[in-house]
Figure 1 (cartoon, rainbow, N blue to C red):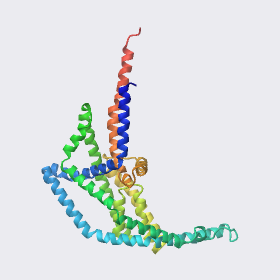
Figure 2: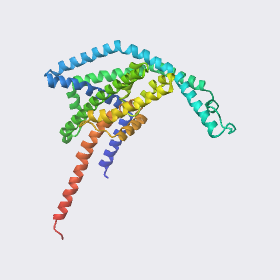
Figure 3: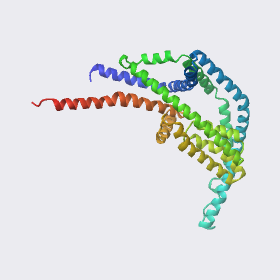
Figure 4: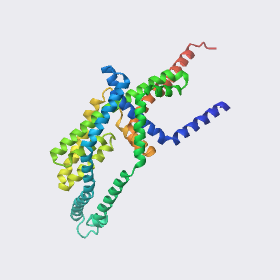
Amino acid sequence: MGFGQWLGLLVLLAGLLLLWSLKGVLLVLFSAIVLSVALNLPVRALERHWGWRRSWAFLAVLLGLSVAVLIGSVLLVPPFVKEFRELIEKLPQAMNTLLELIDANYRAVILNIYGSDSGLPESLAELFRTRTDVGNALERSLQGLLGLVGNLGGGLLKVVFVLVLAVMLTAQPKPYQALAIRLAPSFYRRRLKVVLGNCDSALGNWMVGLLISSFCVAGMAGIGLAVLGVQPVVANALLAGLLNVIPNIGPTISTVFPGSVALLDSPWRALAVVVLYLGIQNVESYLITPVVMHNQVKLLPGLALLSQFVFAVLLGPLGLLMALPLVVVAQVLVREVLIHDVMDRWLLGSAVGAATAREAPED
């Protein structure tokens, strides 16, 4: 390698290190882009189907969302906060009930299999000290978590920044897109415009599918919990729909709250809640998602789970939330740039070289 090649390699490595040091800022920027794509969907619909000018369509969407958020804040947020606090307060009691149930079965197993003179601990209280300590520790942890959530000023500032930036990107997307394209080499700018358009379409399709899926999950959870008589219905249904945004992990977390409340009533009701949520997730995974995502965005479940783990470790909670949008974009970039623009050209070049070698006369 010559001096120029070594210099280019050093510049590339320095650029990668700079990007890695700015990974938090880039993730916030990507979050704003994802939100901008979501806002752009109804704006484009008004432009295409109703013939509105973009400025008027954007203002109408912004006004409609503001009214919807205001109405939702007045009608849904107060009862949701009240019911969610009740859920948090009942969790320690539910934990103690669960430990008592496990303790009774543990004692029966020890006595029936090993006998009373086995020398083994005959209760979980002896094995894990006292149950009240576990419940009190859980209660203190949850209270600390609520206090932490209430004091997340930095997180709130970040959310406001993402919202403002998303609105600015949605209001005038073309200048920002043109700026990103101009940063690429001149020979690739036209192709990059196509690739960015494909990324935008993939993100939009994924968001529409996720929105429909989350509404279906929230509706099924609300109906099922109402039939089983597990309260509060509204808070648990909204949690199920919101946590559906985080596949694999979100549905598991959403089962904890209604299952804990049902356990205070009776074990069979808690088991019924677990069966209900397992059924909802199977219907969502094998019926709703394939129908909604048909001919749109197809993500392998293993790839989705692996991406959540990797981005959560590398980028924290926001990385976990943005894992699937990142995978959707990465999937398009790998297909369009790496496979189509690089590897397919290598294959074509190899085929042309082999054909030339076969046609060349032997010495």
